[in-house]
Length: 449
Image (cartoon, helix red, strand yellow):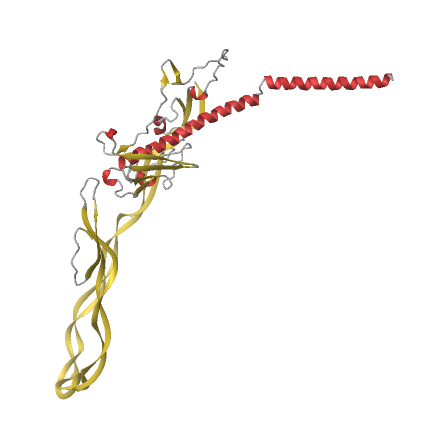
């Protein structure tokens, strides 16, 4: 009995002690936050601050596109018909120099095709859609334009968004009219309002990294004087064949001289009369009937060219073009002009139609005959005579010939070495155009002032 009571007592003590230890640990964890909880809270605050910065960059970019579009779409560039739209991509806006390049939160350029502005004409006003696509972010805004009373001579301006406010009770500005001012008998005490991390002041880190660089001047002129290269002097060489002097040599020269020699000479000994065939000729011997095929014009047809003309007066038909399907209508060339009558017409070309027919004609018949001629033909013979003839001989004469050798040329350019550096600046501006213009980039680091 004693041993059994001792065993039960030990089990209860152990269980009660374990329960108290677990309860103590739970209370400590509940009262005191862990380092992981603190770090997580700080990380969430940093993400919220960066999210606000990124949203502001996107909003600034889309506002720049809107302002550039309103400046571009003057009266003459506006769509003239109800329902008609005119569109400009971001790339086309760059080509027209309407704004500088837009970049996203990471410094990457925005999409020049998916980003665009589109102006659409309504009955009494215009609708401007501004769509911006930067990386994974894409959104758009809608703005209405028109000739409103508050445009102050600007013609077309942006429509103001009317806002309404609830009239306050003059006796209690924090409460609207006609609302009972019920107060509890025991109003709760105001809890201290937690700090809003967005209301605090922060500094944003910008950094620029400049690498080592070497800047060299232009190459000098080529010179014969030797230049040796160094770390800051670059040297190039070239070798050319040049005249270095003259040598006296004997060279063979071919000359022509006259000498008397016995030569065989051909001469005319006599003449004889002969009938000589000098050629042939075509002689007409009659005519014959022959059937041939010829292409003749049998009429004309009108062929649609696909062209459509428009104007205040229809042109007269010509031998080469006809104008059909006249449709008169009225329109305004501008919003304040009077109605004018316009015509539209289709343009047809007038083309001939050909056909092949058989025609019988008289055709001349010829035959080839030989042509002979009676001539006095010379008879030749040879005889030996003494004559002065030209003879070609080779003689040697002294001559100055040029002598060439290899000459080395040098040119050089001096260089200046600049050592790279890293510079960090903290600024109160989330987007600092001055630092960005100097090449600094936002690192993403933010610290509270």
